[in-house]
Image 1 (cartoon, rainbow, N blue to C red):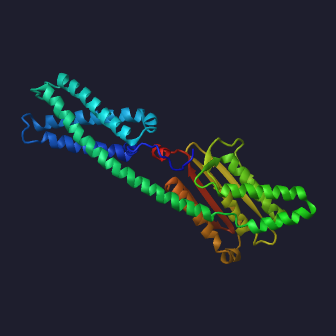
Image 2 (cartoon, helix red, strand yellow; image 1 turned 180 degrees about the horizontal axis):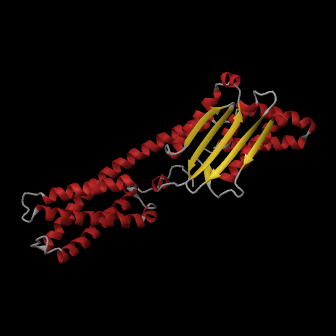
Image 3 (tube, rainbow, N blue to C red; image 1 turned 90 degrees about the horizontal axis):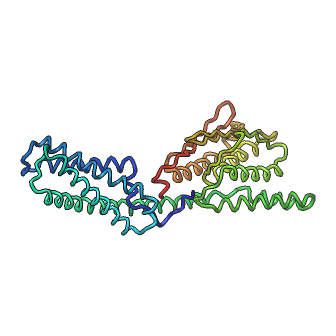
Length: 347
């Protein structure tokens, strides 16, 4: 699933979120309270409040249920058709509930003229639906502007993630052409794959493809560092069929190589662990680092901050990236949520 912007989305998708349902129930209860405490009410106020509250809550919840069941069909139509569907759902449910109320609640609330009662209910729903449409339109436009700004910021951050080893890799490929043309060809192909991945702004890739891309990057660096670069992969026996943002794992390994292997004269071993649960993917990258290396390579934190900003925008703050240094080992832990809610799916 790509997180790129879509044109056909539900403009009332906010009603299907937890906050949307809660806000709907609160607004409906306020309307029920106003109607129950109307000066012209002849029946007992608390009985009227209970009956009206039950009537309105059931009406709006059933209306949202119809819309939720038809959401995948409605999202392919224009906002005008979606607005009509919202009106139709409220009108149909109000009519149905009004007919049921006139037949079942006569002993609790006096309904002198059922036809006028149904007409007043439809009129109230019409006014409330108009308010809903207005507020939802304002919310949708604001959300679109927020998404556009977030997309622009994500593009800017993504544009900064270009393999900084481009110059060294080209030099390595040039040297390989003299004594190992096949290796030079593989180096250029790996570099081309990394460059292509760097241009995949805001796209997702399979976890297995991201690991393959990372291995290509490490193969490039191994021609430069030889035996100084060692990687210990701790992967599940069978990789799950899940997707993650493109260039999620590779920058972490690039950071470990730049700040763990390159400054060391004897080389280093990078440990990579992947743990997958039903709700999250955990990636752990560890590399040895000396105190002098931390002082001379300040870009370590900047690179990881850039990665954190990308993931915060991508997952709307639900991803977690933490860094710790203990006993000369730099540890990066990345937790990516796998349960994508309906709102994000529509955006």
